[in-house]
Image 1 (cartoon, one colour):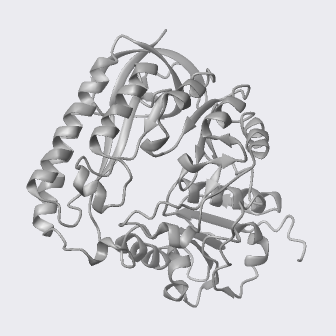
Image 2 (cartoon, helix red, strand yellow):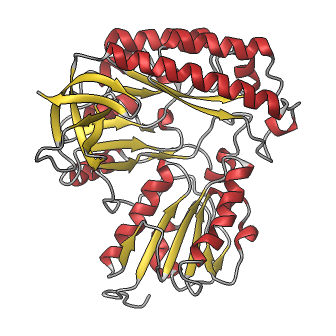
Length: 422
């Protein structure tokens, strides 16, 4: 490899996917900046563009293809490297004159070699966690640590297990070491992965990992995880880390047990509600958020109503709602599809309902004191998030981003919850 230090060329990194993609491109940015490259995440002129693609739906894969044209408007002579799930699924769709490397979901640690080009097929999927891609370049107030990759769940609507491989976990020792490094510049660390719930390093599970992180000088937050992990034993382990953030993004996907069975999700709606109640017995102020797919194949009016009823009971702090989108290569794509008009009507109804429930949850938190991580000033207010992930707005005073401040919640507004410093 040639010596690329002090190269001075600009590299723009674009993430079209999940938080795992975010960690991976930030780790590439760290390698690049250490070798003299200028790093940007803005849509602007650059010598190189690194595009982290997504393949969750057919539409996201299409968007990934179209993004190359958008980037070339900034610099028609730019060189482009494509990575991520869409390029793992079908590298041929990204072959363009300006595209110099296509690598899939592995091999990002080779970014300096990839800038030389001539790599046009995905690296083989590994069975061990790739520990070569670490210590991401800091781009926000919170830092991310990838603790796990791959998935063994094979939900009927999801192609990701075929593109990321089987579940594999990172060494707990490596995770703690990286957390200690990242905490020097970030007051919050988010543990992320394709299926965080499946984390396991020998005899250590996710709860044990949280305990091991209790001496790290930063808040510890979990990204999305599965309901099956919620047990008394797991919650008791979380309570041993005073820095753990009580925000549980607990994937639901449907409030109908029969739909969940068609999705190949391994729990019932009743079990899901039981786990929510268990969480709140340990964390009364927990913010429980979720994802719901509306209009999954064969979803009847009664099955949709079951989802509506569950949302009314659960008291979610926020719900990401998606109309079902066909993903070629999955079992769900072969099922009888729900009419697009029906999906749209149901999606609109559920969004309106969940917005009201979200506002109600925020109102139950008024008058309480939390710790806010400041992020940025917007429209005259410093905004940030509490440990239970409530968006807060306060007068900026002399505050700067990446500060932890005690705040009392005062008023719910359409843009967040107004608060005052305690």
